[in-house]
Length: 209
Image 1 (cartoon, helix red, strand yellow):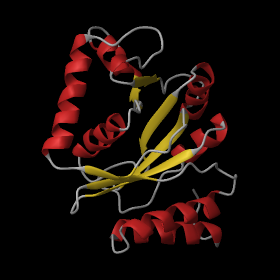
Image 2 (cartoon, rainbow, N blue to C red; image 1 turned 90 degrees about the vertical axis):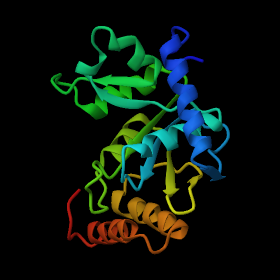
Image 3 (cartoon, rainbow, N blue to C red; image 1 turned 90 degrees about the horizontal axis):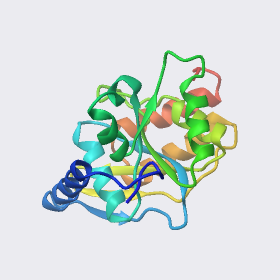
């Protein structure tokens, strides 16, 4: 198993990956809509982001689908003894002090790799009211890769993935399609209602992104 396409992952990360899968099974989570076959590069936009366990269960679901998830991390986390571990776990170092912004750095990463599935919590923080940041969209658009949506139903302990969608450049309209997909999975979730309203406000010119 390789995350960086240059070397096999080390023992510590293999152990952590086994723990992630064990926790995924132990808590009784299951996939109801599998990760789309044949997708080698994409931005995985997941919601809702309500706890630190979200990534663990999403990671477990992707690993169960034989997909290696990657994530962005501040460059200072990739120093010293932690560097190899972070890389082996799928981490991608992002240096916000460089002139190249995060979107440009991630585009370069997509360009140089044959496979890359980057997981992004599009709400940004756990305290979000449900509105999404546009970074996930800008990365996918710049890199020319599709977006795969992922939701987690904490009550049913189910996870599902969408079919890949290519960004059209019309963020408001695309975000509305995204919101409608999420609401079709958990219609009464307040965060998804907020996301749908955010999309409609962008389309109407009442909200910048």
